[in-house]
Image (cartoon, rainbow, N blue to C red; front, side, top):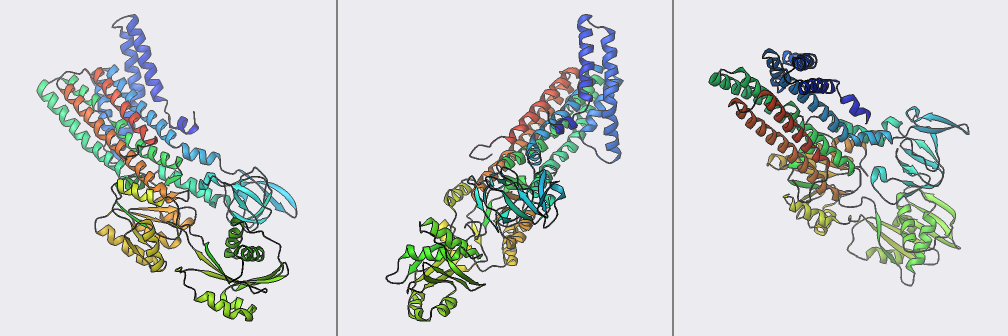
Amino acid sequence: MPRSILRGLSPLPPAALAFLLVGGVLWMLDRGSAWSHHIWLAGLVLTGLPVAWRTLRGMLRGEFAADVVAMLAIVGAVLLDQPLAGLVVVLMQTGGEALDAYAVARASDAVEALEADAPRTAHRLVNGRVQDIAAEDIALDDVLLVRPGELVPADGVVTDGSSHVDTSRLTGEPVPRRVGAGAQLQSGFVNQEGALQMRALRRSQDSQYAQIVELVRRAQGSKSPLQRTADRWAVWFTPLTLLVCVVAWWVSRDWSRVLAVLVVATPCPLILAAPVAIIGGINRAARRSIIVRSGAALEGLARVNMPVFDKTGTLTIGQPRVTHVQVSEGADTLLALSRVGAVEQGSGHLLARVLVHEAETRGAPLRVASALVETPGRGVQGVVDGIVVAVGALPYVREQFAAHHEVLARLDTLDDGADGLRAWAGMSDGAVARIQFADTLREDLAPMFRELAELGFAPALLLSGDKAVNVQAIARAVGIAEAEGDLTAEDKVRRVAALEAAGHRVLMVGDGTNDAPALSTATVGVALAGHGGGVVAEAADVVLLIDDPTRIPEAVRIGRHALGIARQSIFVGLGLSLVGMLFAAAGMLHPVAGALVQEAIDVAVILNALRAARAPGTAGA
């Protein structure tokens, strides 16, 4: 049994059960034996006193909830010499809390699994020697060695070596990622075949992995509005119970009926069903790489009805890709890409990697370039198979090849309908190329919007800081009717706030730092962990570890499923308790029978609440 579960268990439930069983055996051996009565009374005093004292201390702090009914039932059982009924109440009260502790610990498996899998050790390089240290002793700028098969111990950047890393534990990407010098690494990645040297950019305890663990822990320790609603029901339920007790005594003048009402109306374990359902939903989401920061956020997911999306990095990939290559007359596109890729292999510019990838994707052979000279911010030049190749901005290429002005001008005036970033290439054999870059749409967005519509969401709104013409093009491509571009972070906040003021419950999805204020303003902010970094994750209520916004409908279904089960557990449980109280007040339930009935109700609703950790149906709760 996990240690978290053992910590949650109290010795009171087994002690109460032991007294019940011993007294029961003696009663069966000798019907009506006084010994069984004395054993039950001793057990009631020994196990009931801590429960009553704990409740009394709560009352002194101003906490008047369902525990008061349990205390009165225990005290009444002692005064009326009904130890068996009182002992069943103690078992019910403490046993329900133990069951809840088990359920909460079971729902906390995501945190335990994350902590168990966290990097523990690291290899620090000092003067060419390897020192084995604990992960928490890593300091900023430490040079670390990551051997094949080991976890990356801290967030950092590769300084030497190349390998594939498995990122699936953090990002959900099934295909290992190739990394080399300059590549970013996150704590929790698994190095596969090659040794890597890296420089630590964060301490282990400040890493992305540690932030994820803390997000889950904070979420499970939170108290949602629904749980406060349950507490308020308990506060109202207590005076209602006392009123029924007064009526029962006034009608019958029978104190045993009063005790029976108190016993059957002890619903504290019932009220614990709400947090069990909420935590179960959070745990279910965590297993699907959806980190819900709080119980209130999970409840918010169940209630949102207006989706608002950022564009770049959310509906689009967020990284430039080559969309079109135009070459001068007589030139070969594949050969031009081969030369461009050869030169760009020696450049550290972001677009250089994009061009190399495009050449590889198209099957262009990458030769080795020589005499490489890079002018930062302008371009790079080299020699490929005796041909001088210059790649960069248009003015840079013009400077390198004055004879190509006319060809460059003709390519520059061509209108291919694209509006975005361009790179130019000139070659000493007269070939010229214009390379168009653009952000590309994510796949499978149309099914996501259909699912949101089926879940009852209003038509989506697209808000972006990109040029309005680009935003409108993306909106048309995904079927969004309303889109706004050229927005600042403040503009997005004002737009989201206006929607909230109009009565919408906004689900805002973004990935960039400029989205953080709007994410905080929305009813529920959802961040994509693949781009935005710590500030975005901190501003959001929900973090998608998998860089995939199509998980949003599933997150909504999980929230609705958990909220529905929590409400069901509260209202059905309290309703059954009320029915039992009426039977007890009418003299149709003996105190012992009433205690057993309430025990069954409490256990049933808590077990029902555990269903929130399971997968919801496709239709939503």
